[in-house]
Amino acid sequence: MSHAGESYVVEPIGWVESPLTDLATAPKQGDEGAPEAWLVFAERFRDGLRDLRPGADVLVLTWLDRARRDVLAVHPRGDVSRPETGVFSTRSPHRPNPVGLHRVGVVAVDGTRVLVRDLEAVDGTPIVDVKPVLGSER
Amino acid sequence: MSHAGESYVVEPIGWVESPLTDLATAPKQGDEGAPEAWLVFAERFRDGLRDLRPGADVLVLTWLDRARRDVLAVHPRGDVSRPETGVFSTRSPHRPNPVGLHRVGVVAVDGTRVLVRDLEAVDGTPIVDVKPVLGSER
Image (cartoon, rainbow over the protein chains, first blue to last red):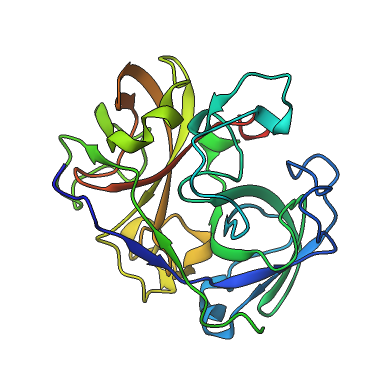
């Protein structure tokens, strides 16, 4: 490949506000008992949020800033009874580019603050992007 | 927020090799007639790929390096008859952090080269991550 060495800069568009603060006890997936959480966006992105509505299902992309980036194989779900698996076949947070992908339901929208359910990301997690769910992803 | 100014660096794990080279004529979504394409990973990530198998459905995250990052509202699908919509309610490539999310089917695996169907990303697009599809995303 002739591309080696290129890199790109992610600038967070917002941050998660959640009662979850402990990675060890937080749910591993949002449908495993995650509480409601706020997505708090920087003011300058307000216009991008203007069509988010309560009731929508959206995909939230985060930057899992506490993850390790030098890990290529893990025991799925941290269960050492399961064989080590290449990270690209797991949803482990530990991976070369630790982007989290979370499907959440929008509960309420208050300006640049969006309340969602089923988000397992911990308090302070940077938000990278928000996308609508496509039909083929339902 | 007290986090302003933090940023994170994405280092591509690989690149797309596709017959699609023209953004204007490429399909907007992978199920709209995208050809087969190769995901070509850098050698150092080989161990992370070891459990990818033909027949798997995976999510490929890309960095849409030709997108504009200063756009917050677009006409969906570039159709000016549709009202401008906040980018976080669209799948437009143009958005503050232009991460593409693509659900593809693995056709073949040849070392660090993975052949997939239904990928609309154009030739040379950097790959950020690969994740398995979860049950809740089917």
